[in-house]
Image (cartoon, rainbow, N blue to C red; front, side, top):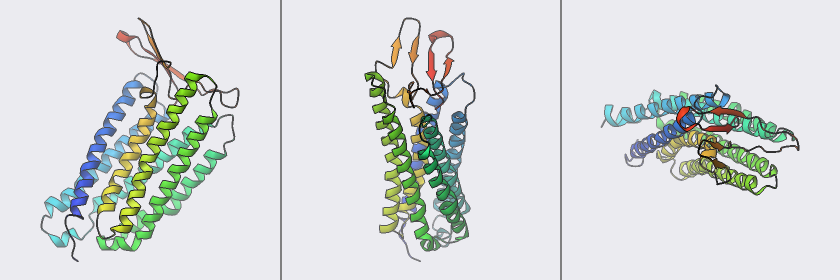
Length: 305
């Protein structure tokens, strides 16, 4: 088997490097989330953030081991370069564990926003995710574990298209559902509606990042099937999922205008990511009030994000 190191293991090295950079952004996003929710009780989304951070760190560790195995331990050992190391297979499993958790967290967000409305949207989205997880992702993980050489991956190329395409479709459904519910929640008040428009834009932005990445994986796999370019891009997908989700949780600290922040000599009052929206005419999203400590005496009104 002949191959070029530049577009194979060179691409793999670049992918691992970019993944490490994105993990740095994950640390920043997680730090901001923990700081802004310091002193509050344990919630579902806190547990999700912790799980995603741990999974993301494990994913990067496996990628680093994979790169070290091929580029350092087996440097110039071309026979070893054709074999798939265990860390490469395991990172695929971690990838499959990260993406559904992010998707289900978005579904939970949609479920909350649908309170007082028809809950067909979350039901449909949930059904799509079940099909993706059980019908596509699990067989692919098993098929990759049965592969021993990189050339064996060519035989499951169409499964790769199925997994990546299904994930991209799920992203489109989730982003569209969130945007629809946010737009439908307009109150007629300029400040609130302006905030909702910013949230819709933010939802589209974070959702489109992962969609573009997945589309690039499909294109690279189709045009360059005998290289590792599509693998290098795929390494970035779980990092982008984690970053985009935690960034959305932190959205209220990024998209605030003068109407959202009321300052006084003694306190600052900030609204949550989804302000009090009248959904279904009578129901508001649940909220919790947490007070930051001493010096600044800051009062945050936050919703279960």
